[in-house]
Length: 301
Length: 254
Image 1 (cartoon, rainbow over the protein chains, first blue to last red):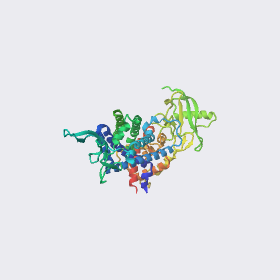
Image 2 (tube, rainbow over the protein chains, first blue to last red):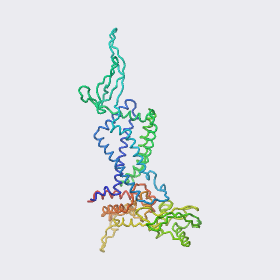
Image 3 (cartoon, each protein chain N blue to C red):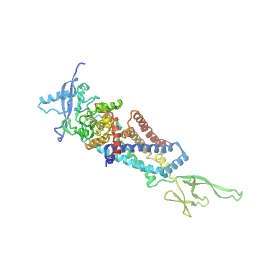
Image 4 (cartoon, rainbow over the protein chains, first blue to last red):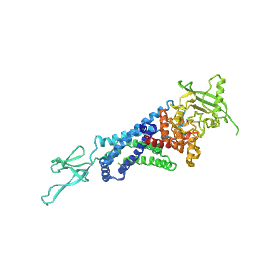
């Protein structure tokens, strides 16, 4: 079957590299737009907006399909890249004693495998820090808010007025958009009273009827903020590692973006110079915007 | 311009045959005219070696006019040496300074096994050509005049630029992956652009790429080193054209 050439041949391997690479570029844009919400909205409003966005991303069917496509694209890109690198190494068993590659090619273009490996290392830590907690162990606290409310203590027998006492009440954000009271402490007796129970880490159930009354939002916003906050002793290391990783990503894109078009056979005297310029802009702007987010969080928290 | 004479040190790869283990040997050569070509300098060194009863260095050469594609040599880390747009025979010693150390190595590629010293076997290129780098023509005696078919000037020019490839292998030698895609891209393009070649374009690209892979060349990572070092200035646009032709061929061939 001749179509097997679409998988086996050296050129086909490059098509897969290019297609998955370009797809991952669109993923970067989507991920970046989500992340930017971390710095554009502040306070409780920002926290709520980000967690609602994260919930949407985790529950929308289209996004789910897209995210699985991203995992698959990433695996193909990495495996294909490793296979190509092994073949390329084999193609020159005896190395040159003296080589001057700077005379004819860019640094990024010659080091795509190394840059890609570094990005993979970053992705492993990135997923362990955020994705693993959010998706696998689900050890993300729910979006809760402690509000101070006036709690009636009793009637003043002399005046007949109600005496109230300010107390703190924990609320959880429900996916229906309301804040739901979770625990109330009776100031006169000191007893804590639960108003509902949480099952499966994020589902709210009525205490008596055991009927599900809602879902909580995972507080990814707080996870990110504490991870990069100055108060966290390892945050500075995290910020530096993140910024360096984005520089590596920038170099990878510097060659990769325009290269993908060439691999797909899209080389045209009119469009190729434009594609190259877009590639350069993309490889600077996207990693830069990614990198400033943890820096800003670190400086502000 | 008055000619100068320089003294140089050469580090040259010596290897008895394809199976032997090679190594860089150091030679000093005095009174090299800066007007001599690189190959003339090697001739001078070989005379010296013969006079010293040593075996001369084997290197490929033929026309010494920069057109046959026979000479090779990886000089100071670059295919065909430090000048651009030329083959080694057109490289002159005026590119070097008195006291320079010059590294001379053969093309390094699994698909180009060393025959002796600096000579490599480039018949892998011949086999790629034989796999599809031709146009089938009826030679019964009533062959049509090729010029009877109108061809747009731009296409003819592009085909000619691709056909300027002399098959020297500098692209493979320069490529960090030892890829032959500039060579194959040029050979595919020179036919794909012309009406006579379009007829067999699908089979040609599929067969030539298959042969290229079988020979053990590496894959293109678009570093662009090949087009910089190509003595004929063949553009990597030809690689993109091959990639397009290949996709078309792979999708439509039943």
